[in-house]
Length: 138
Image (cartoon, rainbow, N blue to C red; front, top):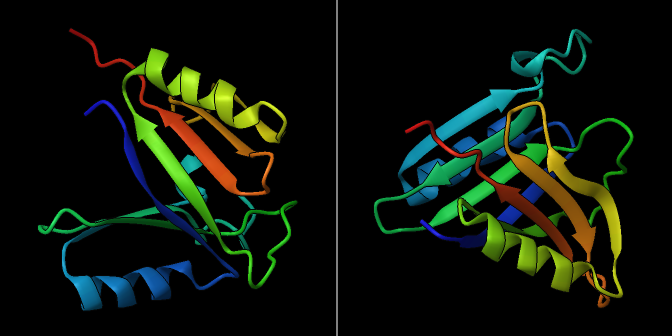
């Protein structure tokens, strides 16, 4: 897979319920990772969804998460576009173009899960998340 483009939904504490609902609607396989699985010890946050991915046999992909602390939940602005894959050169090119004239909220750099990840808004205000999968050992 070179690159994939899909919607990424933000929720105010009910991401698990919402993503399970969408699995009921569309079918498919749902994977959920919590903040606790990545080291958060805050009892109010540990069970919240850090990342969920629904993939269907029809080729649909939908991602979502609970809004993390420090980031405002803004009803009406709860969707971003996720651009992900393993072609680092291609994805870095997209990142550079998307951030030209835009704003960066999370720099594109290696994150605690091992992938490069960044968040930005392009010059039109559209939210983007770019995730470059870490190379797999040969």
